[in-house]
Image (cartoon, each protein chain N blue to C red):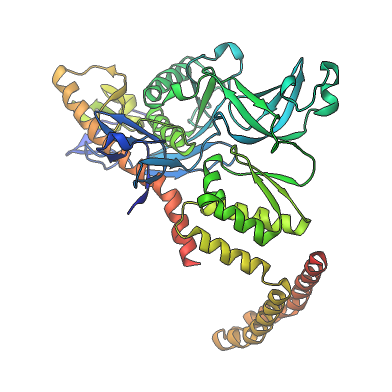
Length: 281
Length: 243
């Protein structure tokens, strides 16, 4: 098998040249350094199943302003290290005193890691066409190590997701995902992303996501109809079965009581279904 | 409790184990949602829970190291973990256990990957029954892996001791209280020792033999640690397939 679950210290290969991320070399052998999924083809690397985001130069990330200091915005980029956005990295020339007018504490930004030095001082920039402040939509969070799976091979997963949900999706390398679109589409996109995150280590992910999206979108009207039909069917069957099996009178009484409650329950469900439909439109 | 007359009878210990047997172990990975990594570990009568946070920002600032992460380990016994209420808060013993446990784990963590950050390990003893520090180290090492922290390997810990002039593996409460020696050992699966303490007296030969016993014990535990970690994700795979 080319992919397998490994724990720290697991032996991976004798070929030191192929060692990549998530591994370490000792006595000219390659071992896993993290708990994650090892892939052994081309290069030997282990993708951890969890872990913090460690900033690298050139990463596009989503940050949240936590502090406005003299000539710097301090930005939370979901890593052990805070990001610094210098006033000169803002697309326009602005005065020190006016910094909070443009970006204030709590604002979200799409930003680029301009430089990371030895002591992990992280410098950010907004001086790029792609970058801007996030003013609408939603930001959700996923495990940073799962970002590559969310994007898919050369962007296939994310392209599919955008297409199917009609949302605009931007994924930061730090595991923050910015979604824009209609509310119910956003819900679907968020649910799908959560599913991808949860199941990213199981083979056949794309197929499952396509199926999931079809099911979720598969016209909610149909679903409620199906549910209703099932419920009715079960209602008919239920009273018969216990009578056959249980000779005790008290038991049959209980079942009849349950029966009485049943219509109320289904009504609730139905109203929920109608609400869903209304919301969809 | 009064001292039992004999701690070993016909080669069988008070709790029915043979001298080279460890107590039953139960492990659950990822029991805390807030923590980056966590583990619940049962080692005989010991019940401990470990939580790992980090790497994260260091507070207070002066503790941070410019070229590596700092590892902080807090061992704490719950006030209800022993028969006589344990006075809450750090005391001489728990500070010592914290220090040696931290030093037992530090050698396997790639601290240089995360300069100016902290990796915090919290171990809470819910129920104590001799050998809580070894249980704590076992749990913490799993929690570290669960948090996705790069490590050379896991660390497993286990104690050997001498009771009734016989070497025994993984002492229980009575053996610990009335035995002649207690020697907790932590090591990596390839045999690098990261913790070795001794209380009591052992001869040179006994020490050597005890060390070998502890190695075998640690290897058994390492297997269980690995199985527990893999189970966290394999169970999910099966569950999804069944759907």
